Image: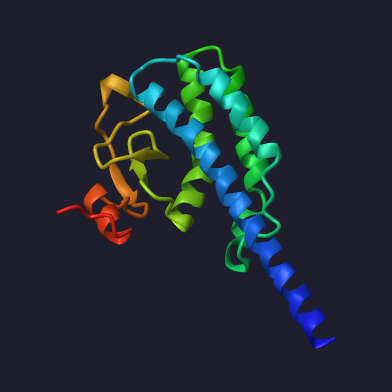
Length: 178
């Protein structure tokens, strides 16, 4: 009987860890498409923005927050809905100004998620002129709200976990060559 309880407990733990990893995986997929939109807007371009936003809205439908760590449950409860609704607004926007306005709303739940989870290589930036936050890679400000007019207006307010450099990665995995 005790062995059965241990086995059931182990299976429940594996399921919960897997569900949490599925949440992280889905959010990383969403973030990649989001970062594409951020980059295009910072370059004053609209290439594929509506398509990427529609993909985000679809991904948000499958975003399950029921198994995120307890400390984040309350904060993430409405995350799928907020991401989906605002991504949908971007997908229907017809002008770059409309895309930027909807992107600002999408950036609110994304910045909250990134500030709490600190995904690797993703920083949260803020521009007081917009005012608004966004996610971006790297430390050089690439403002999606003003593009070329004020491309570098803003500051990094939350940093993601640093990516290992290639040499650190090789040493960590025992693959350093001499």
